[in-house]
Image 1 (cartoon, rainbow, N blue to C red):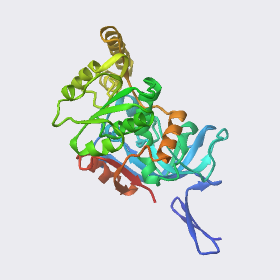
Image 2: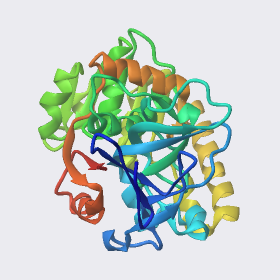
Image 3: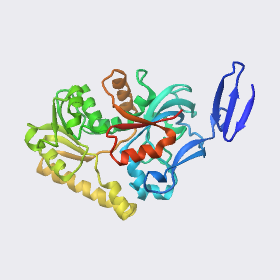
Image 4: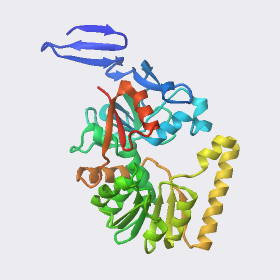
Length: 368
């Protein structure tokens, strides 16, 4: 066996003439790799692909994942533009990316459910600083699950963050169950479409609003009603009352209509909570208490005026939720179509395309 040192890569040849590359490996664990860094906030051109970014040591509950595919979420482009700067600006440069699909390269001492070489998928928490736009990502054990065997890495990487956001709202907060009625405002996006499929799988009766181009896909996924908001009045078209409303749009009008369509005891959940925006405007010390007060005021107001529960909903890692998402994906009951893939090296182009609205569906970065 011969070794050829080339920058941070070790090229290992074997007796069969094969080659495999190890990027900055020491004792079998990567110590440096490629990563896309965000050194400052701005447009896609601020993103920097660097070759020798260090890989931190694993904590006992952490897993090192060799990345094969990562999807670009709206949170990625918003963070790049400065969303959450009150949290992230002191920590720059940071690595964007939440979703991942790949293989386990190493595990911490306390990890028991996953092993080296196993194909996995998962998602980081929204406030993670070292994201998944990198050859080697680090996630906690409960942020990963075995990749559904029926899915490619590209297909699998599109699912976890959006599906966990929907699962958290519907299953953890509203606790939907068979026979209930669920309304998803904005069912054409990744979170909304995930919410529809999760609700259908739970045996619920689902209505949604969406653009006309999404109606057929949503009805095929099991929704009973899909209202094209560009041609129909949501308030007129949707009849009856619901046990849960997930509002992915979060505009004042959708909030008003959604709350009025709830049964007493129902749950209204919006993805457009004000905590991050208020913290960015006033700083963490002032912004977070203000947002807490606003949320509490709305919860009390709607509890007394409408008899409903009001929530700001966010994605959080949840091992139970990710396992259910894995099982549904394996069974073909939960999938998010990938609109376009880009090589990892073309991350700026991918962000440009998302910013300009050229690609409405999921965009995935592939790593060779």
